Image (cartoon, rainbow, N blue to C red; front, side, top):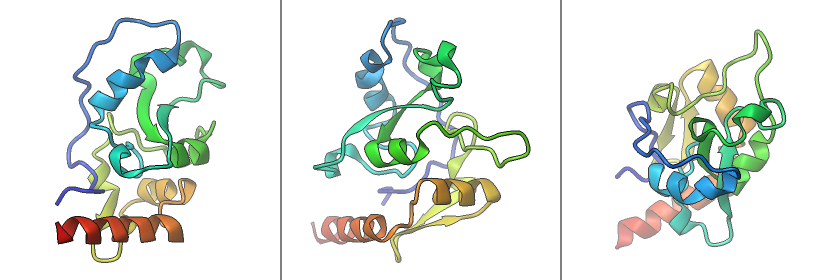
Length: 153
């Protein structure tokens, strides 16, 4: 089952929407592009009743205003991950922030179905897990419950 699992290949952009003046205009494209799944925690939007999904600026718009409406800088993201990431951008010498279009995410972080936890495989994966609080108690419980429900169907 691929629920919550990270892709083994880099994400390749398939869509080429027109250039919009407002980044929110891209949400439908991003939802389709990323198969209705948060690029960071792999949460499907259909299973998140009270969790708003939106648009993450990989390079924060506060630091990179020229990229605010650049489609290649935008990702489909759940509200929790977007809130935790906020305006974070690594400074010189800090661990890179994983970008699903530039990195094979599964080489850096892995979902463990038996425990519901995300296991970091590299320093970048560890930083992502820590920054986004991927293994907080509620997230782990939700993933385990979701898997148990799906497995009974």
